[in-house]
Length: 234
Image (cartoon, rainbow, N blue to C red; front, top):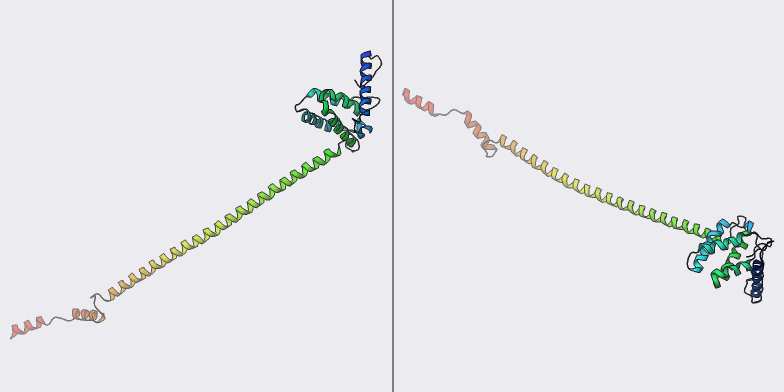
């Protein structure tokens, strides 16, 4: 529709003429933005980057995905022409599919194309800025996640350290109780052994004098046998 070659039919010529008349009519009404007057060298533009944006933007404006409209738009941009790309013709052709939404869409497309041809990598400046923002947000999110992990690690270490101190205190208390029990057992054992030694020294069960008198009495002979002998010889 946008090109004219030798051997074309009369219908094609009439179509081209109709497009040109429509473009002139729209120009008089001020239907094209000012930046449409600037030229674009499509060879300086990275279409691999622009193509996904075109697909997403057409889907957003139309409310549904339409591969035919997307392919038609990309074909219009990549089509080689002696006059180069014509944004006004692009808007006229896209109006048949997108109606009133064709004008804002084509204005955005041309703005990105102008920006892309000025970039050393053929990518619109707006795309680069958005990519930087995405990377910055991801980096900030990763830093927040890392800080949260570090905080939780510190809390866990503090909780474990406090539990270890409490365990040591409880162990010390148990050890003190065990030590006091052992001391009581030892004192009771010494008391019993001392009692046994006193009993051995005092078998009569009385005081010290009673014990000695008992032993002396056991060693002295009884006087009764002598008295019986004296009676027998008298």
